[in-house]
Image (cartoon, rainbow, N blue to C red; front, side):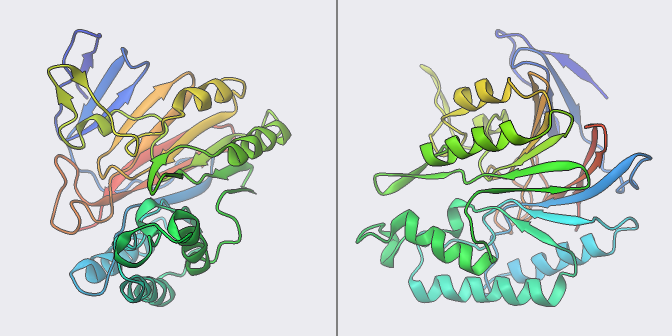
Length: 319
């Protein structure tokens, strides 16, 4: 595995999918080889499949692709115990009519019922949220209304929550905050206060995994679009959590936070910062069901959690 030392004055080179480790001025590990999924290692207490950014609708090839991905997960030699849906389950409700959004959700629910035998924990994505007729978030419907509808379709009673399984504590966040008719990636104050309370009540010996749709901390977000100019980098408020510093400061108090999983960018990276691994997984849909997006093939993350807080991660392509 080639290793490139990165400083503030060194340009980041990319070969295939990128994995970043250390501080933002630390080490970047680059890998290109495809390998078959490995079986879980000794000490694994839970195997997860992290499927994010599926963007399914009945009118295009996404339905066949989504079925292919689900069957791939179910036919792994070592089948996962749990699926984490990282958000953007349907193609796009934000700009759709009510009828079109309903058609997408109906298709999602039928496919999941027909093809999935594993338990699934869901996270809200921005494209899951209906924006009102014509995509205009007006008349009090907007993000809030869209979340209620998406939650109903996903079988959720809360937009953010936590649960415990196999000795790990899982926290599912809602990354999508209203911003005057649009959205930005951050936690609202109510959710942030809940998160502080939730982390306080977790035993310090219990490892914590946090799932969000939008990355809290990411490198690949800088490559999603023309975000560099003569004046420097410009990262849209929707691409990465704008409250990342506040979250980082909170997380610093809890060394038992081990892993933060996200999607949204359709690219993949891994940033290890202050003892926490931030993994942004590639999209199940790749480039919106037209092959690879930049260097990232359509796929999903496969994570083996260990009882002592360690984990093994691999990215799996299914086609």
